[in-house]
Amino acid sequence: MEHEIKDVTILGAGPTGLFGLFYCGMRGASAQVVDALSQAGGQLTALYPEKYIFDVAGFPKVLAKDLVRSLESQAAQFGEPVHLDQHVTGLEEHDGHFVLVTSTDRFPTRSLVLAAGIGAFSPRRLPQAVAEPWYGKGIQDRVLDLEQFRGKRVIIIGGGDSAFDWAQQLRGTAEAISLVHRSDRFRAHAATVADVLASVHTSHTKVFTFHELHDIHSAGEYFDSVTLRNVKSKELERVECDVILPMLGFVSDLGALNDWGLELVNDEIVVNSQMETGHAGIYAAGDICTYPGKLKLIATGFAEAATAVNQAVHWVHPDKKVAPGHSSNMAVFGQKDD
Ligand SMILES: Cc1cc2nc3c(=O)[nH]c(=O)nc-3n(C[C@H](O)[C@H](O)[C@H](O)COP(=O)(O)OP(=O)(O)OC[C@H]3O[C@@H](n4cnc5c(N)ncnc54)[C@H](O)[C@@H]3O)c2cc1C
View 1 (tube, rainbow, N blue to C red):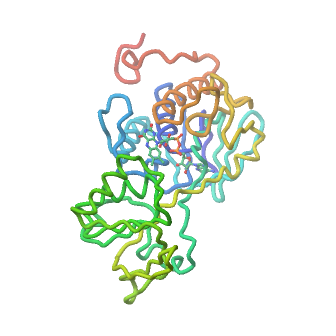
View 2 (tube, helix red, strand yellow):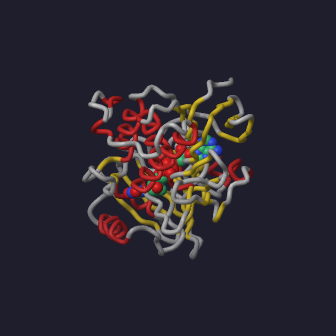
View 3 (tube, helix red, strand yellow):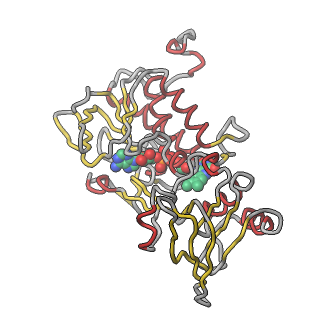
């Protein structure tokens, strides 16, 4: 399907891309966002929707999924589309415009803002072959809704932040939590580790260090227990469970972006202070871009999105200034336009 040409197309519907879409509307530019995932929000939706974020300006704390919802509704006021389930694989350049290409669609655009985060990413899967058939039938590598785990016996595999965060947050919802890790060295925030270890005595939480998944036992369509193996003593132990959450990090893949002739350092696109990539009409913002002093934060992504979009709008419409003016004084919001 060939879509209508837009002034700005943003690759990536993470917080950076969603705020960029809003900014395009505010600047009176036609725009669209294209993302491979089936939901907007990037890492916030895919990796930590139920976690609180404390360092977004104006929110003492905000659930990641609620921040995404607000960003979506802020962007939606201009009616420009977010195209989901569209994994971008190609970029074509035609007479004065680009076309982003996915396996099914083509998105013509006069300029591009790459807000592709860490690339198209997917959770690292359990290495045990025995686990593979149970993905989607009790093994899940994303937590989208805590309530789904109410009364469930949950095994969390991993020793990093996500493993400990979920062990902490599922307490009180899950009937029992077993955290399983191959060593006794954890890569999670010390306070969270201390909290989870302390809870072993007061809640239905168990921590199995030096253990790994060995086998999964089914009672029909779903499993009801697993066997854990002590990697030192080789002893086996059976543990009842309904859900396995592998929290083993994720693998990301820049994929197509590698081949677009942009300057990359450690899989990040080098930009200048205008968020220009060096290829006229192509800008980058958010986790995907790098420059001296770069911080990979939602807050910096927002600022970079504003810079990138203002530059892109000026590139497409040279009569429009780079500086946007103040939203508090704009006709587009029903205010007096200065
Ligand atoms: C567990 C965790 C906790 C965090 N906590 C905080 C915090 O408290 N505060 C904070 O400021 N930051 C936090 N961060 C970091 C923050 O989430 C990132 O800085 C932020 O998500 C970057 O936003 P982004 O829009 O640039 O990229 P992303 O959120 O990564 O979004 C990029 C989007 O681009 C899409 N994409 C990539 N390649 C393609 C392609 N080829 N085709 C189509 N779509 C593509 C992806 O599907 C994705 O949706 C945390 C990160 C993690 C993992």
